[in-house]
Image (cartoon, rainbow over all chains, first blue to last red; front, side, top):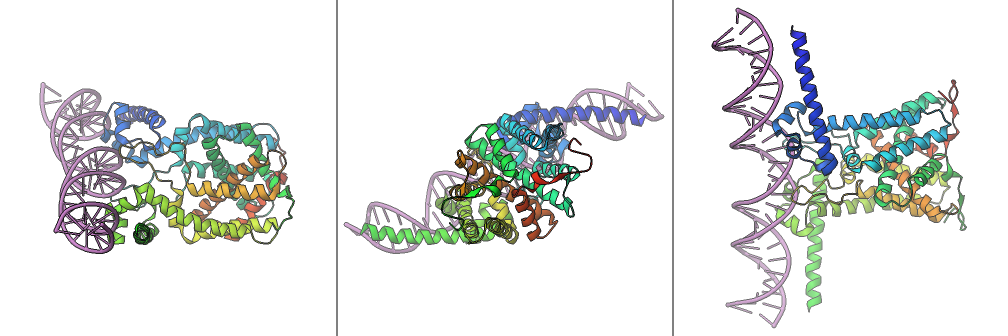
Length: 214
Length: 214
DNA sequence: GACTGCTGTTACCGCAAGTAACATGCACGT
DNA sequence: ACGTGCATGTTACTTGCGGTAACAGCAGTC
């Protein structure tokens, strides 16, 4: 039958695809985001054109690779966000989950944050207007949804939730990025500080001796 | 004299350098961050090696270019941050200044956020560990300093200020990036929403009907 | 006039993305 | 058994970019 044949081919193709992705994973883990198609092909024991047949172009491969890691990370984050605890604890657990992930695999993290650069041959642009990594966008949207369905924010709450979702994710990302580079404090301290920020301690803090003007 | 000669040469070199930077600026404004050295040289009416003599490599040119814009933007932000108004108003003015800047010149903004990719010739890496754009780092440090010298945060205040500086900058950046792509609301609304977030409205908001667990 | 130091050029290297064009193995329908 | 499709794999190529010799004018200086 056509269907069974198709299924067989499809299954084999999917298996191959997964093998290639795992090889690419290994290379990215080793070389970071500037891993070349040649290197990935070599790691997989094959040559370039096969990669291109499977993924179209470098952006396609990167997107597929990013999807895997993004899905995995989002699963962890959802778990932390859904834990049966009070709001502050859940926020802290979520921050900690994210920071732990980027701490464990900085190369993968670095890769995920780079969209795909720009195609440098004839093809110009590459989605002008999409600046940040898809991972950040997805995390932002996800968090926005959680905020909106769990909190009562009154009229305009949906938009507020989206702004906050992306804003909080950006805060987490930037702080984590800086922390990963300088390691100025422990992860727990960082988590506490960020949660404090979200809890309004900035607005509540007293002015210094000289008064508010200066 | 040696000094006068040197001065003349240096002045002419500086003038050239500025001209080249302005040409590069025009190209980046047009082509975004994937502007090629060839294109920049052509725009300046010269050829590649001259660029390399002036700036070393592409990273050098990009760094010089980024420095100009970063300095300009930071000046605007400092002005907003130093305005004689209460804290909330200053925060909102600063957010608005940043958002206005990225709204006016999205190409330049996009360029500033891309570190320098990775050197692809023999040279590997390119500062492994520095992920995000220098602009973000500088804004974060600057804000941290302002926070620390203006607010009384008790013991550990310096570290707290740095975390907050980078966190707030990241929040601003990510939200701005998302907003620039989707335009879901006016700039004023975005500013208000972000300030609300910093003022602890997330922590203060009431749970939805089903209770805190779900 | 030779020397130095700058600006500018053409022509090249190396490398990575992406693409033909050709070769092979495996299942089918007849 | 035999060609027909089709996916898999290869080598060898093109294009375009970053970066670098090597050489050509053209100031000023001794």
